[in-house]
Length: 630
Image 1: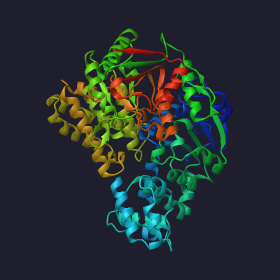
Image 2: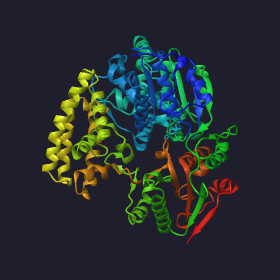
Image 3: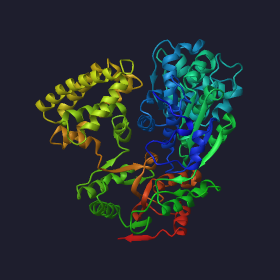
Image 4: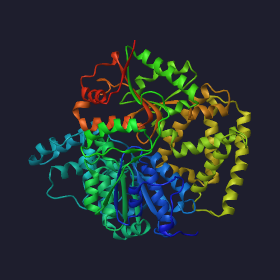
């Protein structure tokens, strides 16, 4: 593989980078890159990976480790690097924080010292508020008299994130213990130390991984040699547990690139650091860079975003909009309705008319709300169905998963890809892309096998042969809910044979694999209910042309031509005054999903606007026009 000189390297897949991005990309120090909505943060990381790999600055066999907070973000970054540097992409490891710490515990758990050493497997289970209360109540009851009051004062709601997640596990019990020591010891005793099969959640795996690294200098050196470069995306949402792990492992040895936006810190409730960037700059001596370009939103929307950005950061500068407006009329408007039914019917009619006149897909329009999006679904489902448009509630539960997570899940995508190939003929629209996706996924699972051109040919030949079996099965069995279990089992077994059982590597545990497979079955059964063929069922499963309905938190990182910002009222924003900064950041994230147009809606039957008068005041100052319906 030929390399290029650093001065000769050019971006791939895009025209250019902004000046600050060029400087940050070429900096050989740890860097702190802040960038607002639409700045192309993921693309910047993909280009930096290309730069490091293609120039040999990250020489083989060394690798780049990229850490994201969501699986789909990790997969998206991996895909981008695969397109930008295909010959070197196998040296780019992209995973979530949770997956990385779990990998260390699973692979190196035998290095845990003394009483922390695992005797066998463990179970992942998230604790309830009731469980936290019970443990702390028992800890208080059993504690020495001098500790009871302090244990009773421990905040129950933030115990897992702010106390357990910040606690460095001691090799031996702390003696004499303070209140926090006693409470944390009690938690680990009940969940881990005295159970034949420990019950843990990811914050506990994080603490175990940190202990492994802290007490195993040889392992730390091996990881540092493997990963001289580390990327962290959405850095503003880093928790204390995640940050301390990152710091203990990479502070002195790796060049770390942290990317994010202070103004989009909306995970404070989950334990995100108050100002992760400042701590990172101090601990890693990181050079700060600020990206100014906004590739997503038009100038009018960027100006509106800036009004709210200043509430979160008084020093915020206006981003430079790179997008050109393609709409007539206002970029931001407020629609006020007398009833929820009128709201849904008006928006449905607008989407239908706009898609008809512009040729855009319904998927270019999004319905977002602060919370409880299921409350909106019935009215919008009925209203949009009159125009043969589907609404897809991405926050809906499918088994133990959310639909948005299922649609982006690697296992589910592979199963669906095989079904898509079996349900279509070669040469049909979408077939080459589906083949490439399935073939690539199987090749990645077979990474320990022959990855030469000949190995790839053998994989494709075996895939083609087994697809013929699935295709014939689908011809012999009508598409209905009763047939779903059988076809899912058939496809799972087929992939398992081709990959020598490595399909199960797509899940963290056997239970996790079952959860994902069960969710896939449930979604496919729903799709089969109204489908006349397997091909139609596959299309209905994805619902690619549906209008997405989702919470602001689930919309983060996404963009749409037109965003309908539903429920700008006290019912949706009842907690606004409790934490103004977090609430305004959430509003800012929702607003910045729009590329061309945002329509805020208010409905009389959902409540007033007293609690969010400050948001309305800024919209009024910006001259956002109000239209009354009904």
